[in-house]
Amino acid sequence: MKKDSLIIFDTTLRDGEQSPGASMTKDEKIRVARQLERMRVDVIEAGFAAASPGDFDAINSIAQVVRESTVCSLARANENDIRRAGEAITPAPRKRVHTFIATSPIHMEKKLRMTPDQVVEQAVKAIGWARQYTDDVEFSAEDAGRSDIDFLCRVFEAVIKAGATTLNVPDTVGYTLPSQYGDIIRQLIERVPGSDKVIWSVHCHNDLGLAVANSLSAVMSGARQVECTVNGLGERAGNASLEEVVMAVRTRADIFPVETRIDATQIVPASKLISQITGYPVQPNKAIVGANAFAHESGIHQDGVLKHRETYEIMRAEDVGWTQNKLVLGKHSGRNAFKSRLAELGVVLDSEEALNSAFARFKELADKKHEIFDEDLQALLSDEAVTPETEHYKLTYSQVTSETGETPLARLTLSVGGEEKQGESTGSGPVDATFKAIESVLNSGSELLLYSVNNITSGTDAQGDVTVRLSKGGRVVNGSGADTDIVIASVKAYLNALNRLHNEPAKLNPQEGV
Ligand code: KIV
Ligand code: ZN
Image (cartoon, rainbow, N blue to C red):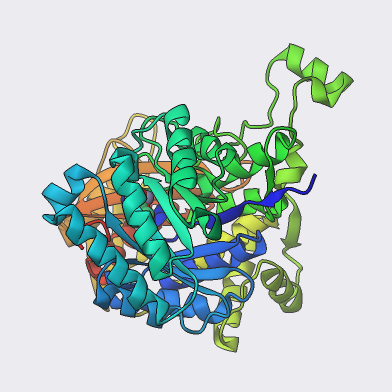
């Protein structure tokens, strides 16, 4: 029997970016978008164009480079947001405007201060504005999970008549249960006139840990688009995880009447890239992409797997992109080998100068670490993205002593907007001493919310990948840094976070107002 297509709508660059501190630079977003396209995601929600000029520019750049996937921008249901979204996606061969307005009693009354009639009227107008830019228009009824079903039918009927082509039913606060959510989707498809002319979409948050279960239940009820994020990134507890949805549908093909176009071998590379860029580590026991997802610790399991792999494995690690760390380059690799490996990773450096500088850093790294893997190259590229314009704070020298029985001491010199400044401090360990030495110079007034270290590849010569999350004046940013020396990686991450606080303007959250 021919299966229906299940459209995979990835919102890592929009809802995922709304995770605290997960904001990405334009270059990082382009790298993520290229990887999503390589994974054959159907729709890439590239951002919320009205959030800031920087967000507009990033979406517009993605629309210029992505050729196969549809590029989408979110917009609240107002004329200005929709104009920004429509203009940002203009260069894309396939483009979508995604507009939304809240439909639950609590959101309409307390957030929007609008009556249900006004909400319907605004939604219809929004579709008209969006259709001026593209025929591919998605409408979301925010907080549909807590909305009245009769009212949802009314809004959806009105937006179908106005020209919406995809109707999304978000469980914005992750409140529904799988049977209930599946039932909502079934009722909407049965009751809304014209429902067979549109794609029904789901967007589930994970507050009760049910985002994937709810999404899959909705698919069984007729939803044909799932909105999801790589690693389940997203507001609060996150969104449905792309890798779990895709692999559930594929592994249980005996149950699901749908199939996706996703190239599953690109899942693990996408997960690693996004974790490294956002500074959100993946928990080891996370399904599909966690380091232990295919590790068989217990003796009984190992024995079973060796005798016959399917005794304990329902998927194959290599099918989702787990490979033994692949040696890609070494100390003797030349500039051409380096350039072509970057091209295979979908990275195009925009000038000879950028390539030369990245190659010089690669050689430095290859001197310290003999085997260079794709993950090392991705980390190197993140460092490379730091330019003199974005690097207000920079480390020029550091000396850290840590001896048995002695208090660790850090001395360092920083360049602050081009001016050299020195600082020193003791601390409970070398990293603590270094951060305090930085603060003795900068006195930044920021609060350290998180410090975490992960190894990029295996072995004691691996680079440490450090994430630092700082908050200041209500803004939260993540900084990351990689180096074979953990203290240097920590300094890079701390300064990266401070540079982000310094450079990135505050931006609008789409879920504030209309
Ligand atoms: O969770 C939500 O309701 C959203 C909408 C903007 C689609 O992210
Ligand atoms: Zn959401």
